[in-house]
Image (cartoon, rainbow, N blue to C red; front, side, top):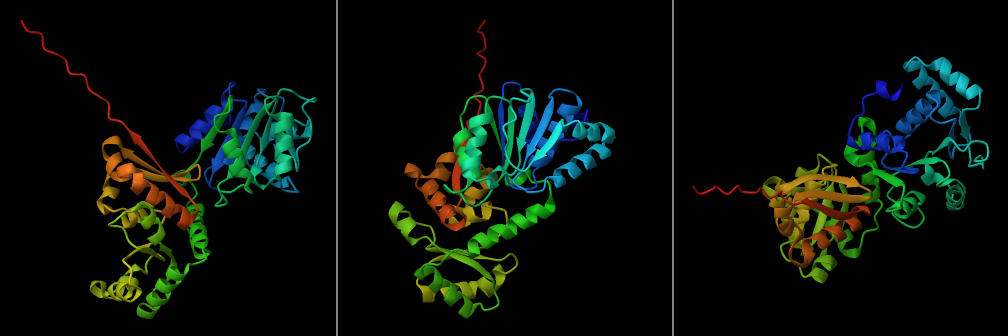
Length: 362
């Protein structure tokens, strides 16, 4: 009823709806940045399922103290698609319930769907209780936002790793390219800039930044990343000693006319430098760091999926991208982790072999 009235924006949204509809998937985990539709699609599916009597009860569990926002949101959706009366009746009859914490209600209805929103904001103990009681008993669906806390303290990341390869569980990893809200995409760039600006600079990095501001006081440096230790440990040549990241629109001020400023900075610092202006185009970072900058032209797609900068490339270009003994790939992985706290992985596709038809000799 409701699902048929909306137009899904991308493949990941279609995968999420397919997983929610599947009887084989008892647990569905939607993980990714804000603005991709995780909460909206889960609420829409639960609402549609109750109206069509697929499930008896739709439970929404939120870390917020007041669940009124969800009720208002459901009513707005219902009014938009001309089913406001049905939703109000379902709420009145207790078929749609919003809870500020998990409560054991499995005895009340085994034919229920439980949606846990913003699960990354729950305490670890409560997240464990939810799985202990509900996983495998009723349809369990969760949404967690991508954060830059890829460590043991982030519940979203813990669940992402725990649920990976679990039977009857579907994980839908939304990427940055799946963001449908342009404001959220702009805010994501600003958030990533804050992550880089919060880095504590090493002695070499601070030295480069200080010298850069002497010769280019009108530029805006976000951060400086020293690559000396990484390149020495991997014994890689043709890569810079440091990467200077500036705010968009300020690269020319750092480089200077005919590269004079950056040349003077390199000379005084005694380091080879490369500089980029930061955008959500991660290909610029790879072009600046890779021993062969032209490799960027052979990349099919770059996105951040499942907490990793994911590079898609043809198999014929993989060896040139990864390098001998995967040295280039390891170099890029270490650099991205130091810069943004994100690892890097490569996905490649082998070309399909075409069978030649042998001509029959007469």
